Length: 183
Image (cartoon, rainbow, N blue to C red; front, side, top):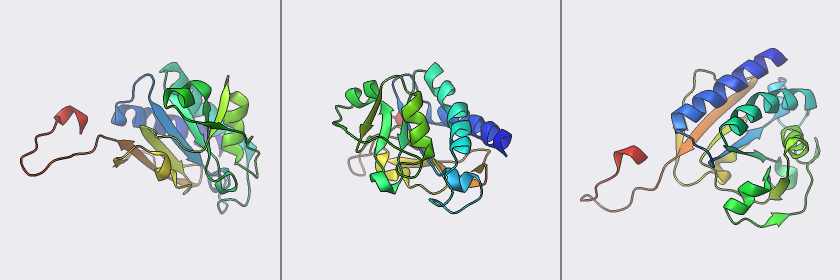
């Protein structure tokens, strides 16, 4: 199972980076239910091993490209975000004081907090793209406007995934013209 988690997480993040045309300095939010990855109901069977496997597949790829990872906590920390302090400062976000634990924040966020060089907890972030692993509801942490992204992989472990990228809002009326590169 863990080899499947690693392989599918790597494939998913690489395909999302390409589809969303992410670049250095961008932010990707990951909401991850380790319970769902191991085939259980969200919030019922937190698995540090599954979370670490997934994190260790995704994080090095993002880090190599200079893309920030924002790890969404579970509902017990109000879906707060764990990210590098530099990402929080980039968006001018207020840092709050909470340290995630497997059953209060989630195993993925706990893993991120321990792995980041200078971890920061913030209440919200506006990410450029994201992966929702197991129905964690990442939409609140995406920039407007979110656009679904379909990948070749549909699951990481036993958890369904939903991916998104963002684009600038279209404004104006019927006479408006838009930059095709931003769609």
